[in-house]
Length: 372
Ligand code: FES
Image 1 (cartoon, rainbow, N blue to C red):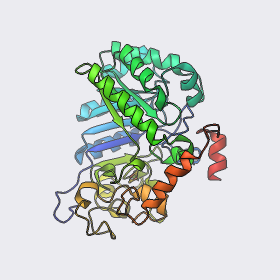
Image 2: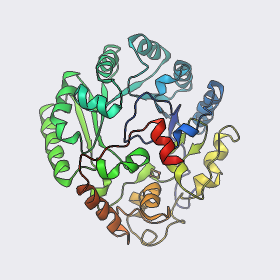
Image 3: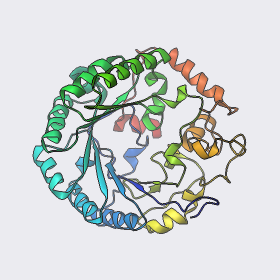
């Protein structure tokens, strides 16, 4: 589709969520709360078709994620096809389901990049947050990834319980000889939305974290790149989520539902097509779901007349829905939004939530309770 005044959009970034199966139970997981009811995973042949069709439409970056994508036994087959088609492929993994031998097979199949996530800098907190013993295996996998010749890319999701350990987190990253470290504060979707009051760090924690990140950035300049991403609730302008709806991101969920972002299936009143029934070309260019918030015509005030709309596209549709009940509102992170007070109230509610309040872990029992 060509948006008035814009070049035609292309799905440059394809995120293949291969499965919702995952041995971990992270309380900030971005998967839907009812992931347990979405069982009918795409088979290998359909994924291969998706890769081909998206590539023909211009997709260049392929993210392989989940759940835990390494639980798919056909991962090597998909990687090999991605290489043949000319994708730059990135495996986003907890490390569970990998060993040195499989990493070698993925390397031989043409995988370009592996990102290993950690929950914390030490076994006790890491394994508590993961809901299972995983820390030692993650260390082994991180070393195996490096030994296989990959750049070492580590991801730590930060929140109230681990952000004060950032010094130790970065010391671990340095010890593992990481080339890139992403310190990304949890974004409040999926399970993180349910746990938002409990996960949100305070403004003081964020400031301390920033100082620690800057100190390490200076110390390891030229050796390790550190990215520190704060939660947008503390900003006054929204993020340009997905670079605009239906602009460059295409997510395919494990059951084949095609989505403009990983959270969009929770938006009411929208239906999203499935790759079992439609080709990627139709899905991207013609489907009502992908066109719903494309461009600027859908915008209401204050976005419609805002001189910043081409920079932030009105922010995040999913966050607008979660905070106002209406996905066509301005993202309330923006202080021009009449609903900005809801973000400030959420910060206050988090500040008065005791750290003793139990986290709700992503597991089948909690999924049944929350979605049923
Ligand atoms: Fe869905 Fe931002 S996460 S539009």
